[in-house]
Length: 228
Image (cartoon, rainbow, N blue to C red):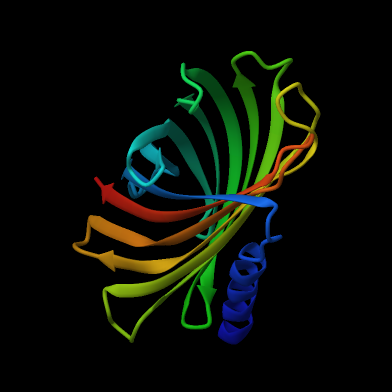
């Protein structure tokens, strides 16, 4: 089982890394996310999380996007949950100014043991309300994530995931079809029982639409998760 999962994740990263020479614009970026979360109380299926993300471009010289995302989660079983959330996403185009996005979403998450590690699958459906767009933009995001301790009992784990995003309708900003693909590989450290740090390489591919070139971003990604 573990070999199949590792093969899938490596294949996704390799597929995502394939570029059409001369037709892809590349950039180096840094993303950092801080997540505050309630892991759950005995006797209650409800919990919450609150994320803030800062994303740069041109290395760290320019701020590209800020994401603020609270989520309310309900546990269906010990392995699955549903959730609803809201995201406020201001972006700062290289041409100047600020573009505001308000986003509402629902999600389903399943987590279970696999091959000595943990397999997680997340489906998220979003309605995106972007400034100066012709209407709401629907998007579905499917993520598959696998983590496994580097050795039995270790607080350090290998982590790999892939997420494909698809737009569900046409708007003046974006057509229906593939929005982007993100493939990540890195390490996660359970620093304490309440604090986890994750860092690694994230490859983001955005296919060009309506005559625009494809884009590929090489990202140093870090996440700090604190549980209460």
